[in-house]
Image 1: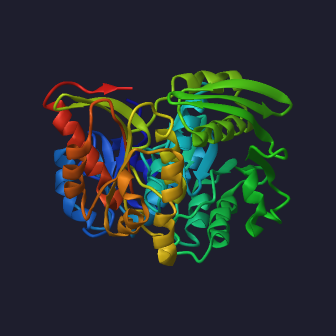
Image 2: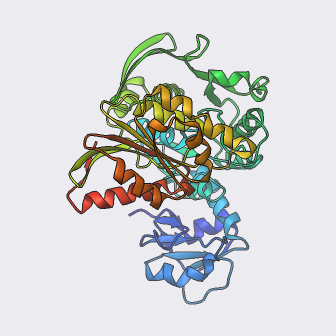
Image 3: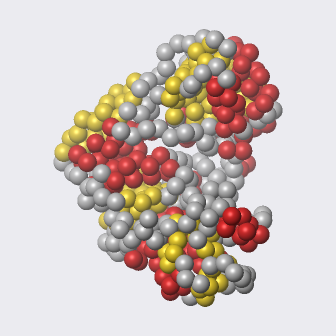
Length: 460
């Protein structure tokens, strides 16, 4: 395998002092997932990663980036490992002749990043952020892992405080920056949607001159997007007549959508193998971004046909729970009011009994009670037959719902699972969603474990 970093190249990038001659084929910050040949970068968090250097070499690390003097192992000695990781990321960006795309937004960042990366991969070697590596260590790590031959780099950038996105954008230095949506998320750290829009607008701070900002047409109403720098090309997507990529029509089914999308004077009939109006928006945005990156619409649409939903973000499967066949929609990876409404609407397309398990939505600030209660309307509009609620914040929604449709409320996921198992019937469609800390991921894992004792999962 070709070396990603040599001792000499890493020393030039960081100004560090090499110990020995070494070559690494990857970069890792976690000994639990480190692969043989990786350069181990110990960061300081709750624990000091330097304490895990012995384990890194036991797992086959090629070298270590270290603030401590280490002996008898290949290393690069630096003053600050996080700063050095950032410098590796910058150097990787300079050496790769790649078109870089940064994706941010209140919802849909990871899904759009994955879809756009799949479209780019049809046109040339593509590198992307793994999972949701979108913070102050995830972005430089993703950049540092970018091979020299990369033609397209797709990076996710997140934030929950003002100023964060500016720094991440300056690290990525994208040619294209995308804002998926402005929605009520992280309101515990912001006073209003205007404040969130202002923080999201920081994605342009590192955008190269002549680069493109892609945003929802509806976002133009926020002050942050009124007077954008003339050095940028601004393009939009949405249902509005003024959108550059316009959704003319969309027909929803439980298995996907058929949409008419108009882009640069051409109308495309697009089959989207992913259910929900939010996926129509994602695809429209991705097609616009792909075209801005020089990728043909044909190439982008071919990638769409093979695209699969992600675990925790809409992946579905059939499970057997004691002879009851249940269709499970796993939306357990995080939630805010916008993504909750989208997931509930998708569940509403199902045939037969529709069951929702909803966990607390976190970081919503002083208005969190109203935002939880506000889900009552979407649940009733989607004609959800049974609603199981989990967590202290969801108690307000439990009080607001008609008792006839409430399966029950529980303070934690284990108790909620017991209520759910007692209430499920053969043929039900079940959707599970909540913020990461609500335990909905653990609840889904428990359902799968009960199924696996009886047979294999059939993933749809």
